[in-house]
Amino acid sequence: MTGRRCARTSTPRQNRVAVHDLRVASESGDARAIAALLDPSAEMVTDGGGRVAADARLVRGPAAIAARICDVLEQQPAQISEREVNGVPGLVLTRQGRVAAVVCVSVRRRRITDLWVVLNPDKLRHWNRPGQ
Image (cartoon, rainbow, N blue to C red; front, side):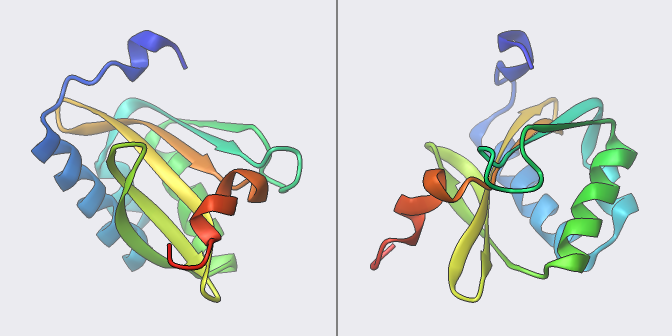
């Protein structure tokens, strides 16, 4: 993903709405609803840091991204919450009381263009400290 793709051309409210809608669609397991939120050129990168099976996987296109999200949540159910991630709205997936993934998104013209999914336990360590 290039810096050009990461440029924010949406308002903070549009980002919050997109993240909220992604959470609701993901919780429902509705791949079509997820895909409808994504830009046709959307990309999702997962970062497992070499410690998780989904290490540095790139998924392109709304249908493929939606299918991947649904597959993962079906295989490994998680609680999904909307939280600030790196200063912007994002999602936090929790399993058995521990953060298992953090999702950042980039939004352009009310559509999600990029998703970054951090799965690396080392990078999630601060999310799992007591009191977080």
